Length: 254
Length: 281
Image 1 (cartoon, rainbow over the protein chains, first blue to last red):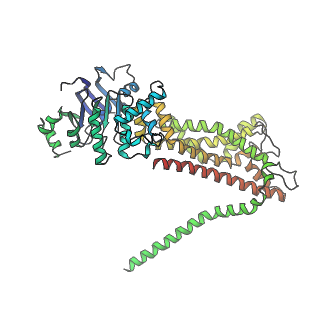
Image 2: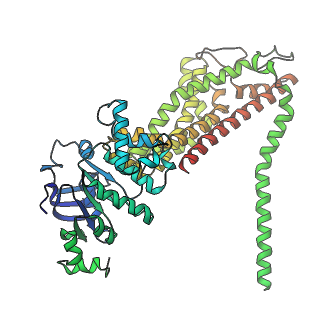
Image 3: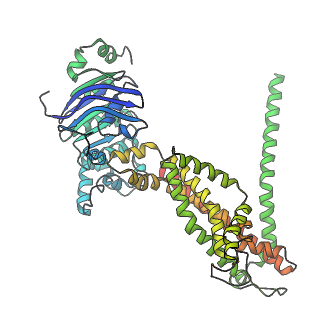
């Protein structure tokens, strides 16, 4: 891993009230790479992901100790505005979440109007670019003003990706982005993730081992809230260092 | 085998019993509508909507004064009741766990079950008796008091129905909490809230008891909310209990108009909801 470190966690512990979901995770994520987080349900991988853009604290009883460093700066430091942070660290969820009252166009531009008021022409340009990068432009260019709910599930998820990349974040967090989609739509998203890493650093939670193997550069295996193993994906899937990792990726438990 | 036949037979009997119950349930409504149309429709003409009441004992005349009065009283009740009800509903949904929200929710439920005449007496004590005169304003206040808890609970319930994932998606885009509430959550719940509001308006438009103690009613055209004012339900009450045949005729017609207004508001509410489902499908 010779890449520049974009995101790092330092003894990150994430709690729900008194329950510890993630225990003291210290990890580094290189820039312009795809990082997969795997592990059985309830292992803390989603909670860990949500701590990276401070969405964890929006959950009931959510709090953390430790540090999360984005470009070397602690995002939990005093004086950091979580709303501004979330514009630098975007997030896409398990189920597509287009805003139902907005058109396709308005969905993509939803994150742009948060900061100041860019001009109309500028917004149009950004929306088109975001949709092109999300590989959705050709399918929706003639119905930008129709309801986002008229799109298929896979298109809706790509729309959410377009919405997330439109404000130009540095990091994109994907929380099981294909688990509600059919195999074809899943494949398109995976291809997209591969494209997007040229411009963004991507952290993806997945419970699909093949997906992790296909799209990621590094993989982290979580079990019972702890990081069991973290390393290059190829190495992890061919020669895991821990027995538990091997047992999980070969499907013996989880 | 025998048992199966018996079971089959019992099932059919029960279906018939329930179907009859349905008919019995809607029968009064159909009966009421039929009676109103029979007795009231013939009196509905241009004069009914545009003219003032004729002097007592004479035939003809209309209820223009009550139409104007109802519009003004209900309009003013909405002016105060809707913003308060909607804002309180948003609070109860967004801060659902707080003591204030829990208490308000409980009180609103009690209020929704309180007979409207109680609200009328209350408004009489605190507004009419203090000012020493009846007024359209007092009527509006009573209706607004009835409206707030209805609107508040509907707003709250519909906001709570908006999927949590939408709220998270907005927050993850860098939206502030209040902006998430307004431009995503409230906007998504809006068609449903409009429905609830229309139904609340329909209900208070037909309220009679609270107006008896407050707006009182009047035989004259008045747009001064500080004076006693006519309203459609009051016309029904006064004319139906009055001694003249022509008054009875007008009371039937007015009752028909009231039920048509409620019917139209309900239809509007349905249209608002249907649009919502279309957009989701």
